[in-house]
Image (cartoon, rainbow, N blue to C red; front, side, top):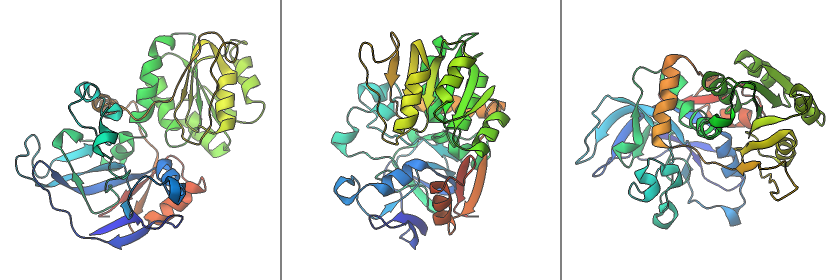
Length: 346
């Protein structure tokens, strides 16, 4: 089969031919219908050799949907032909966190060497994907694969982040979304669907600010040195009750702190290396700062239900598997509006 692999440190990914996988006991083989392209993959491919945690070659793709092509011995709960989405942050299934469906916070994943597809294990940028357990599959139930695949990360991650802050996003409150790209434009829709808060979007790109307005942002502000003052002015000097930074670079993290209100939540989702000092006097009183990771299996079900209701949709651009290196190149240059989706079978 064809697969997109990261094969050499510092080199771009390549489309190669690899052996077709076969499901072993308890495993499920998917024929991949759509795979999502994510900035996290670019971050992985930018790590130097001395810090690279995975084996090479690595088949990319941690967002995947497909149809069940074959079942390993003993598999129940799915059947051949089922259209499913893959829950990415897979855990041991038995620890205290996994028992709550929070496999994204599995307590034994590192110890057991469990890696998500595309982030250590072979990923979805291929014609077929091997899934280790049917519990990691969620029915699409009529959702279009192209529309659904980004929701497994670009929908699930902001949903998980926003859900924690719902008690603070009451009528009259303000939520700030920093970065209106792949995750951010979904976060804006989730905030509008789930809260009565005023939503203010920040980005350095006029195209992405335009997208932010299209998907429901009440205000769209250029993310420049004046942005924090603008947000303060929009909130009457109070600041925002919740700030979601989907970039995570030092300038955006600094802006997140500058626009936070007393008792606000600052949630750093982006992985661009910024950090925020926390201590008495460094932030407004009782500001909480978190850096969440992905979301739970139950939350993925909730995100897909929101999509079926029409409350959230993802702007997508599609590419063939042979065009997948171009998709990553365009994403790296900031030329993707929304999310890029690769269709391994056309």
